Image (cartoon, rainbow, N blue to C red; front, side, top):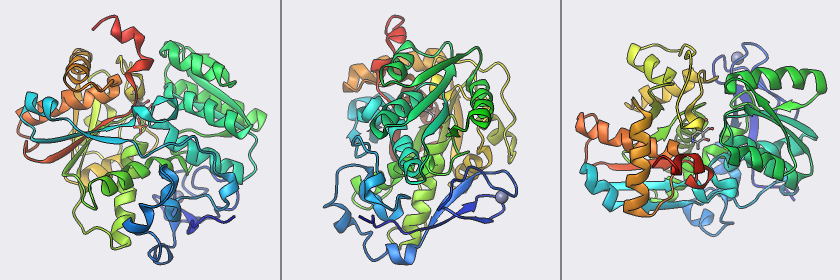
Length: 393
Ligand SMILES: Cc1ncc(COP(=O)(O)O)c(C=O)c1O
Ligand SMILES: [Zn+2]
C-alpha cells in the first residue's frame, strides 16, 4: 500500500542541484555536500493537519506526508517517537526557569533518539533494495542500527571508538550486528566504514552523508509542535554532535510554515557542546560559516564527542537564523547535572541530556536566556547505558 508521502526529490543543501530519490543517493554529485529531501507541500496541505495526525499511529510515522518512504511495506518500525514531553518544575526552580520542559528521548527503542533517524534511513534503504549497511558511530546510532537491521533482516556493520560505553558495544553484538572497534574517534570510525563500504559494497549511513536520517530526526520538531498544541517553545537546548536533530527540527519548522501551520516565529536553537570538544561553539563565537575539526576531542559524553560535523554549516546557519546561541559545559558540570535531574525529577538522563541543564544554568545566570521563556531541554537518551558514570556520581 502507498503511504501518503509527498516526496518529490532530493536537493543539495548548498548548490540546490536536484537528485533522483528513486535511486540510491549519498551526497551531492556536484559539490559533495549534504542532500535533503523535498516534498510536494501543496499536496501535503490537504491531509497534514493536527486533527488528522492526532488519530494516527503513535510513532513518528504519523507524519507520513513528510516522510520519505513510499510503500508502507518498507517501513521498519519498533514504535520510535511520540516520546514524553515532561514539565520539570523542580528542576526549573533550581535555576529560576518557570516554564521548563524535558523532551525525554530515553523511551525510544534502544533507548535513544537515534532510533528515529535509523528507522527512517533503514526503511528507505529497504525501499531501495539495499542489503548491507555500514555505520560509523559514537555508540548509540550503532545500537539502533543493529536493532533495526535485525528487524529488517539485513546485515549491519558498525564501527565505534574502542572506549565507547560497553552497553552500546553489547547491544550491537546482541542484535546480531558485526562490530569493529577503532582506536580513535568517530571520525576514524567514519574513515574505516567509508573504505570498507567502497571495497565491500556496503551502503554507508554516516550522519548527513545519507539523506534520510535527518528526516527521522525532524519528527522531534513536529512532536513539540503537536504536544504544545500547535505552538512552539521559545528555546530548544540540544546536545550537538553531528547536529542531525537540530538541523532536522529546523527543517521541520520550515516545512510547517510552508504548510501554513505556523508563522515566522521560531524557537531559539541552542547548541550545547562539551568544553573538551566544541567545534561548533568555537565557530559560532568566531562568526565563521564553517567549523574547524577539533583536536584531541575528549568528554565523558560520547554522543557529543564529535570533532567534525559533516553539516557544520547547516548547524551554524540554523543557530544564527534562529537568533540562537552556542555554549560549552565541562564534564564536572555534566555529572552534577545528572544528579540534579535524576534526583529532582525522576528522569534517568544520559550525560548528553544532562549537559543541556548545565548549559541552561549558565545561560540564565549570564542573562543570555530569559528565565520566563518556554524552554525545552533535550534528553537524547536513557542513563541506563552509562553504568560507568553511576560509579562516579
Ligand atoms: C545520546 C546522544 N546525544 C546526542 C548526540 C548528538 O546527536 P546529533 O548527531 O544529532 O548532534 C548523540 C550522537 O551520537 C547521542 O548518542
Ligand atoms: Zn551540491
